Length: 379
Image 1: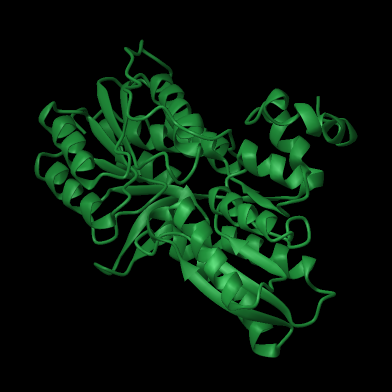
Image 2: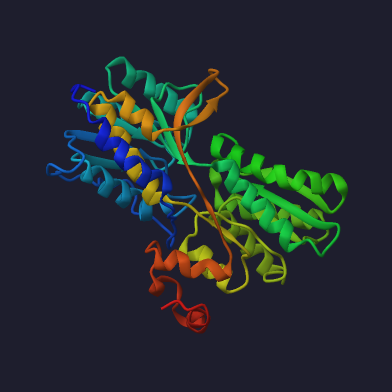
């Protein structure tokens, strides 16, 4: 934001690569906490320089944040010439605020945040705006905030893919009973996932083609709570369920644990999201029906290119990258956005995730799954 050197042609040329690429994500479970991913970056093709602060939300809900977002953001920001300091707030609002205050007081050139709590994100953005630091909402928007741009996926499309995938699987079972286990009610993305699912499933519930048993959001995307909640709903329904919409692979895994306990795993299709290694293995074992593959590498690259344009004061270049928009109902504004396209993954599609390099064959093909991988052409 300090320099006014215009690089519109360079940024615009890279835009097509960002918006037409199609990648994804996945991984095994767990993260390494809030270790710094800081490194000095040499002058790079992006031509930007200085330090950029990044705050990721947590590691409990999904393996993606440490396994994919962190290294991919590191690589993308370094490629733009930045020194990237990537921290994880581990779902702690106070820690999120403290990390942001540290970045702001140190004078980072830009701030990239993925808040667990949008109100906390909005407060951070107000502080950054007060000292002229541009902010990009990464993956999760800070509703009511003042971020310059937002980079994520077409999250209603994610939900539509989940809903349609399950509906297709249950099409020959009239009146099939469905339980929906959704993400955190404070996460706007979770709301969009649900909206997308409902656009497909609500007409089927209304017509009687399917029956909704119960829909339940899960605070903080807590997998353990998701499992116990699903178990209670299942018990209250007499142990009957024909299909489960689980908002991501973590919640899907919790649901599958309960299905196994009741002898229903492999008999009840379960959706997921994030194409994690655990999710892909569950699909190959027949316990999970589908997951959603999302281009995290492209999300990271779009974010880094936006940051570079903003730091150079190149608003036109940034606008050429962020051609979409997300409406923020809390302050009635449209946030200029990059919204990437998700992809449905069934068992037959798992090889695509591996060949594109987001999951290694060794992560999913060991032991009882070796033969399955061979049959799917994964090596």
